[in-house]
Structures are given as structure tokens and as C-alpha cells.
Length: 362
Image 1 (tube, rainbow, N blue to C red):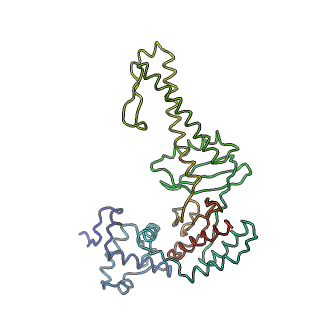
Image 2 (image 1 turned 120 degrees about the horizontal axis):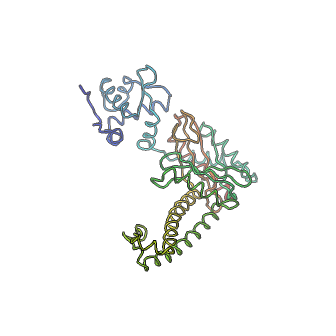
Image 3 (image 1 turned 90 degrees about the vertical axis):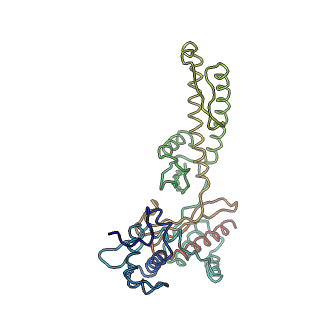
């Protein structure tokens, strides 16, 4: 006999959206207790803690549903439950109130960071800021170095998650820089490999911005050539356009028989085909380069979600900092146990990044 199902599960993903208030309360208690103590919590304890009284048996039913959803699990044979990585992610995204810092906390961070000598090098400022940030959050502080604008020797795009990737830039001076970027929805891994190969054949000695400009110029030239050629083959009655607007149109080639007599027409069509392919590749690569130039806001990685710091049982919270011109030059943040005090650490990292930006902007 199916047991009582307070969530009305359809699929795990749908189940998340449908967690009723009671299930959310119980789940929140399990997570908050874990964040506070690191210990599993049992149904008896929870039935005493929640606002609306429930018997331990009813709490156990809800816990069993939460377990089916992959939000909590039982470590060894203990009667208590702990949140899974997926559960923590759900808590951080959907249930947690990120507190704003109090005035006193802001002043404390300001004064900690203000005491860093402005005369120091950028490395000095960052090193000091990380030491203070580590003290404030009781976690290890990390920095991905300033985003320089190196002349490139090698570039590589690596997928981290379906829509997040890493671009690895190797400068001519041997410096290696990693930037986290969002990927266009649905971009296949093969396209990342293609972009990597395509760029490495062309970028040596250029910066990202120069590579992008150069590609955009090449793209415009390809387009102009393509327009002339397509007009020519269409005027000759060898082909015609089908489909809607300019991006969706396709060139329909007809009368293959006539082509055999006109070898020039065959050459033209072959060139049209390669130009179409080129346009596709260049458009995709230019898009990736644009994304690589502008990496992003506070990011939270829980446990294995980050291939960068995937120490199991750890979480990473990073925020970008900028130079005087407002360009993102790097990210700083903390790595700590998954039971970080997220509601406090997130605004602290964000605020510290803003102050460091101000200091580097001088």
C-alpha cells in the first residue's frame, strides 16, 4: 500500500516545486540544524521544533518523501537525516533569506579592509583582503587573479555544467588564467572543441579583444562575399532562397544537371557552402569570445557542482571585483565546508568584492 504522500509527487523536479508549507518547514529545520551543528536530525526532534504540532510518525512520512526527492539522506544507520548537495542547492536557491549586512557588519568589514595600505601592490592588497575575508567568514579565502589582458598563446573552452564553462587563457608570458562563463543554451561540447581549435590556429600574439575584432571583420567580409555569390547563382537560375528572414533562409540548389555543364557554377556553389559553414563557426566563436571577456556576479557552487574546487563536502562562494574602468578583473571568495553560514557569507563576499574594487580603482 502506498504511504501517505503529503507532497503529491509527480516527478522529483515537479515535486520540488510542489513542496507544501509543512514539508518545506520540516526540510528547512533539517538544513538549518545541519548548518548549525553538522549533525543528522531525527523526526522526534523535528516534531518538537516545528510551529504546527505533528507526530513523529507524520514527520517521518514527510522525511521519507524528502528522501525520495533526493533532498535528504540517512548517513549510515542513524535515525536522523542530513541534506544532500541537491537539498542544499534547493535550500540556497529557494528557501534561504540572504540577510543584508547590518550597519555594524559593514563597518567591521570596511575597517578591516580599510587598514590595508593603499601603497601596496595589487597582489598585496588582494593577499591582505583574503586574510581578512577568511577571518570574517571562518572559511578559506580564494582569489582568481586579476583579469589581465594577456597576449595569448593558447585558449581552451571546457564545459563545467550544461550552461557553464571555463575558458583557460595561456598568455605568451606563461601566465594561466581561468574564467568562468555562461555558455549559450544547447551549445554542444563539439562546438567548444571546434572553437578551441579554430582560435588556436589564429590567436597567437593577440588579446581576446583583438581576436574578436579580427573575427568580426572577417565575418563581415565573408558576408559580403556570400551576398555577391548568392546573388550570382540565383540570377543564373541555379538556386533560390527558401524560408523566412535572413537568418532562417536556406539556399535551394536546383537543376543539378545544368551544373555539370557549367563548372564555374559548381565552384561558386562549393564556395557558397564553405562560406555558410564559416559564418556559422565564426558567429559561434565570436559569441564565446564575448562571453569570455565578461565573466560574472556572485556564484555559489555546492560540493561537486564546481569542477574547479570539487572537494566533496565543500562549497565555494565567489564574487567579481573590478578595476578603475569598471572592468571585471578577477574573482575573490571563500571555500568552506558545505555547512557554511550561506545567509551571512554571501553578502560578506559580495561586499568585500565591492570594497576591493574600490581600493583597486583607487
